[in-house]
Image 1 (cartoon, rainbow, N blue to C red):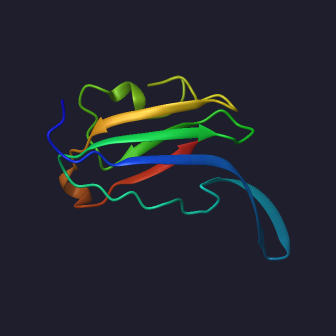
Image 2: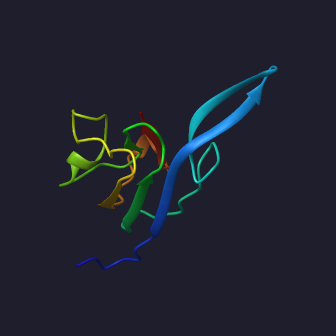
Length: 113
């Protein structure tokens, strides 16, 4: 089905307590860090990312720099383009990488809570 290399990643979203200016705050972090992991892909790659939601919040993943041909339902804010990944559940993103020109070679993802 796909002619190019298929990067495969698993990302786990959970809480991370950070301290700043003598205060602590809990944030959503990917694989225990903020920013999350680097996913290295090339234009033309097909990508499979397993998202595990261990945070107390329902969430979605948004991919900047990728045109979502034929799978726009899996990219964006909850209840607009997709249902959120409920706490304790998993979701697998599958898409082909088509980089938008104004992002150059950069693909950025972030979590919506």
